Image 1: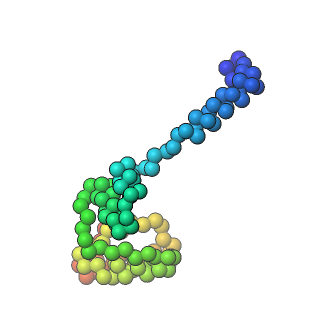
Image 2: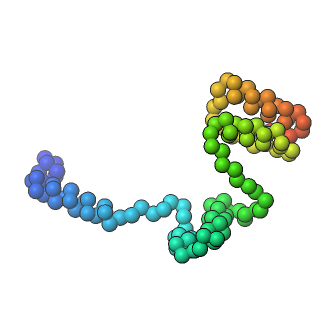
Image 3: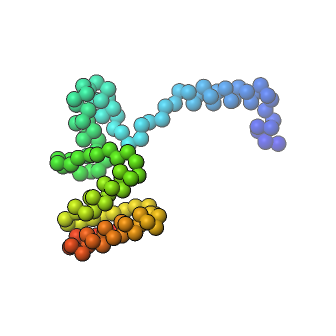
Length: 127
């Protein structure tokens, strides 16, 4: 007979209650975020938030931040595809592209754009 089967209903209820109470005392850590940065962010003014994000990015990447980059929010598939196509068309040195599967039409369009880039001397790597 197993230990669980031998327990009375009251004992099983007490074990379940203890497990629930103990689990309420535990909080999962925020994955990948340094506690010192969380503490700094809690007391930081909004103007310093960008600096904290930069510091965390450098810790994750293990590389220093390089200025001159920009971010553009792409809201849907057509906007994303258009931005990718434009980035490929404007590449001058190298393209490292990693993607999921494309349907036949989109795959053909990206292949044509990547082949055009390669023909003008851009190194093209597909992963």
